[in-house]
Image (cartoon, rainbow, N blue to C red; front, side):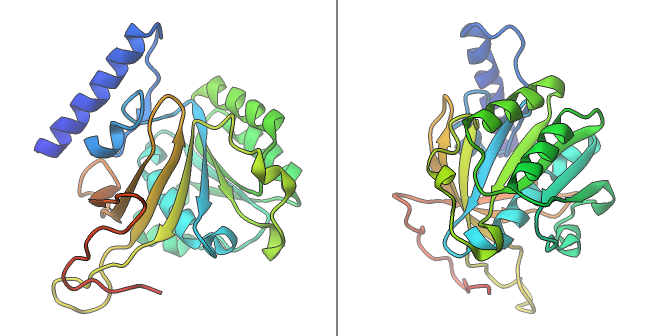
Length: 260
């Protein structure tokens, strides 16, 4: 397919650029499969040997539903390489929801942490463990030291780390949130997006997210509407629906309706 071919060419160009810039061994990446998105990253995708921040838009900063679904779908291609560890202070991760997105939950290891410090400590240990492809930690805000430790843990075995920002039990955001993120490769803001009905107009169509790449080391930001692709419909879990200009939703599609 043309789009897939363009995505591979964009990733290849990014890796060549990294080599020309002095990188001896190109870092493996997790691409989205669309050049409009992968072109924002210097390597043509999110590097596997690094960690990334994901936060929610509006009330999603507390509930974490849309960001968690986005992260679960993002990690789906990595389950072939190892287990996915998910560390949280709350026990509200809805595994059947991940299963509905095509995530093989038998590869999921859930860990309940007591506080912020333990969440980040377990996340660091998981990223350093053989057999773990990726790890997610639901935390409020890692400080600079914790961020550097997470990066070293990712580099040790090429793990993919995610810090999913959530306020602790609906409380106030901590002071550290203002300085968080300088060690992360990228920072994302995720919110739900309207979804059209299926062709038979029964039930709901595939879930969609309003995705904003706020910051990317060595790359550029961007905003998109992404839709979930069913497992088995290609190597990439997302399909680009539209790009957003100046953080405004693109022109509405026929038959669009809101979810939730």
